[in-house]
Image (cartoon, rainbow, N blue to C red):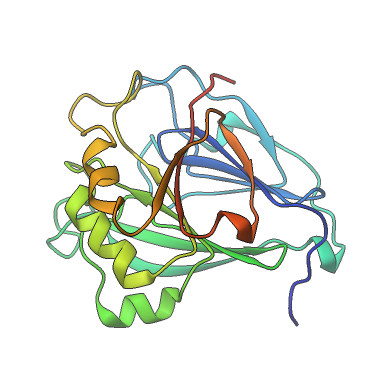
Length: 216
């Protein structure tokens, strides 16, 4: 059954690789983090919570207060997973990683987690063409800016939001977002949003959106 738009879908960046997606009735938090990675402690609320892998900076479920999940089919949130790896050695260095495909409000939102390698053709086909791609760009623990740009070209998303990069917060080992933005400038419009949250809309297609972290 096709998922119809219930209300507007908002996407909020909570820092690192953590996002809260809300369709006006139900919500999901992806990859909540602990307080050991250079961010203030996370406190948020959602109907659902998921993690791409088992590291503490992505699976701190206790940071998320659970809300009731409403069973209205028009307000559904569904999640599909595509198995990948946290490294370029088939998981031997850092383990497995789940690419999470969230369907809600008529949109497909893909969260790449801590993807550590370029996608195979089979993996890319399983993921499909997302309306919104949430992609790590900082390197060291994940793909770097060059690999992230190649992944964007492979998946051909409508909108891109970079994540897992260094700014005023976060691990020192990872790079800032700038190299990724430079790699995308000829293909996407770069927009510094000035907020931690957007209302997802097809008028944003063709843009890379840089959200601003705001302590919750």
